[in-house]
Picture (cartoon, rainbow, N blue to C red):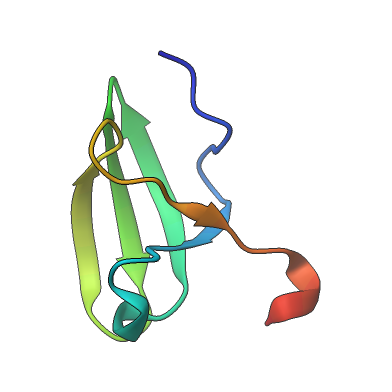
Length: 59
């Protein structure tokens, strides 16, 4: 499955907004490693969570 995100993109997890903005570190198969500003590094299964890309103007 293709995802419209790639390493370096900034995202938010809409179901965990308290995590803040995260930057994608890597994507391997369906797992993304993301470093979130308020909760640190998380590994997310992209088949289960629809991340929202953050535009540069939103920082």
